[in-house]
Every structure is written in structure tokens, then in C-alpha cells.
Amino acid sequence: MPALAAPAPIATATTLTAGTLPAGSCSQPLTIAVTSGGAPVAGGTVAISDEFNGNAVTVTTVALSSAGTASPTVDLAAGSHSLTATFAAQTVGTTSYAASTSTPAIVVSIATECEFTVAISNISPSSTTAGTLTLTPGQSGSATVTVTPSVEYTSTLTAPMYVAISCSGLPDGATCVPTPENLEILSTTPESCPSGSLASACPPTSSILIETFAASSASAAPASGKGSAPIAWAILLPGALCLGGMAFGARRRRWLSRLSLLALVGLVTVLGTTACNPRYNYLNHGPPANPATPAGTYTVTVTAQANNGVIATTHTTTFVLVVN
Image (cartoon, rainbow, N blue to C red; front, side):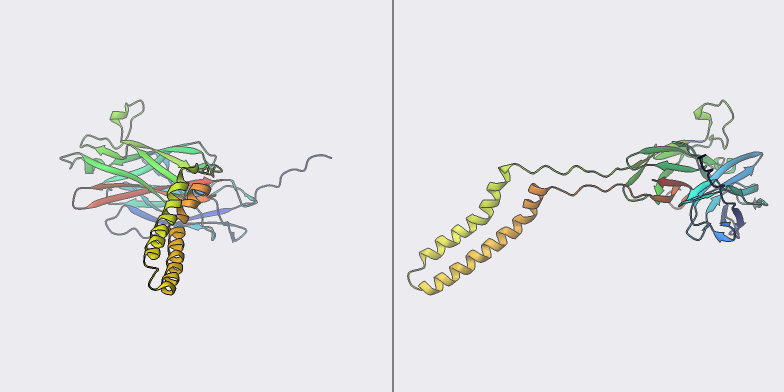
């Protein structure tokens, strides 16, 4: 029999809406919705692209909620921007969906110049979905964080400014290590990187390493008999001392001595056994195995923060981490 053809991906529709820009801000709130046949696409990722000064770049990538929506905020330079949202062709659950791009594009005019913006690029291993890093537990990935200052801002600098890079939104059992952690911006730092320029003539970058962890199946080996002697002494020595003391005073009040002796031996035994029980479990059973990084789709926020000692300036971007 001839092989059955795979069913065609289901058509989708993506919409992008710009929220109200706060006065004096360059952080534009957005709302994304992806539907298929009028029903929400409960999962997947959407990339936001920005056409600015003749160049189109992906400024952020977000994961859709179970309602098929996302509400990212993007930091934009002063000027006019044309924003679009693209839902890449992807499988959500067991359903294959076709790609779709919002139309018409949202045109945003930013009057306030941000001190700097932050962007993610060079995600590795690469994915067919823009702005997405896909890993299996135990695998590592990387990306480049670029902090681009505005000319208006760098022209006011009288001393170097340092921007700290950090990540949040990671699943349990995953880490993010930026190298370097602090980027230096000088009054001469450019806001663009001409083709063929040396790294020193471009905006500063940091490489982030994302690590996930596989489940550990190895358990701690039982300890040798060296631990038995301290445990025995912890139980027997106090009991022996009490026995000797009670035997010394047993002549005058024999019945009282015997009763006290019985109570003390029972108390010492219980206390000694309770105190040694955690140590016994550790020496003979070892710690439990470490779980793997849980599977799922996560929106990871990369934060760039500068602090002049009085005011902290923070800008962010996001990418999607998929753990299979």
C-alpha cells in the first residue's frame, strides 16, 4: 500500500496590537494572539520583528499561553518602527500548525531615546523557530547578548558605565551564566556595528551559556564499617555510665534504683538511636538521585541593568527555551 501523506498543517491567524506607550518611555507594550479557526492556539512561540532604519531584526521571542496570547514589552530606540509578529510553522501538542504573520504591521513612533537596548542573537543550537533554543536534559546551549547604547546617551558620559547581564524565568535544574557578566560602555561606544568592523568598534556583547541537567541514576555507595563504632559508642557509652551510677546506689533503695535504671536505659537508647538515624540513612542509603530539568516551554528574560549609584536603569529582552 502507498504511504499515507501527512495531513497539511492547520491554518493560523496572528494579530499584534500595540498598547499605550507610557509618557517619556521607550518600552512599548504589545499584545499577541494566535488563533486557528477562531479557537486559540494553546502553545507555541511568536517572534516580534522590527524594521527600523532600513534593517529588520528580531527584537524578542515569546511563548504563547494556553489561551493563545502573550503580552511582551519591547525597548525601542527613538524614531519610527514597523513591528510584526510571526507564528512559525510548528507542532503544538499533537497538532501541526501553519505559519502566519500579523498584518498590517504596527507602526510605533518613539519620542524618548532609551539609554540602551538589549537584544539576543546567535542562538545555538539553531532552531527552525526564530528566537528559540531547544535542548534535551543534559544539553547546553548559548546565545549572544548585545547591549546597544544610544548616541544621545553616550555623549553625556563622563566615566565608563557598566551594565550587568542576568537571566530569569529558567526552569528548575537549569542555569544561565553570562560571560562577561558586566559590559562596559564608554562615551565612544557606537550604536551600530559597521560591516567588517572589529569587535572593539561595535556595541559590547556577552555570551550566555544555558545548561540543563539530565536525571542522575547513580546513588551514593554505602559507607564502610568505619561509621559503626561512633554510632555504637553514641548509644552504649551513656547507657553504660548510667548503669554504673545506678549500681553504685542500688543498696539502699533497690526498687527505686531498678525502676530508674529501666527508665534511663530506655531514654538513652531512644535518644541515641534518634540522633544517629539521619547519619545511618546517609551512610547506608546515600542521597536521592537528582531529577532532570523538567520538560516544557519557558520564556527566559535577559536583563541588562546599569546603576549610577542613585538610579538603576533596566532594559530586557526575551527568548524561548524549549526542554524536550
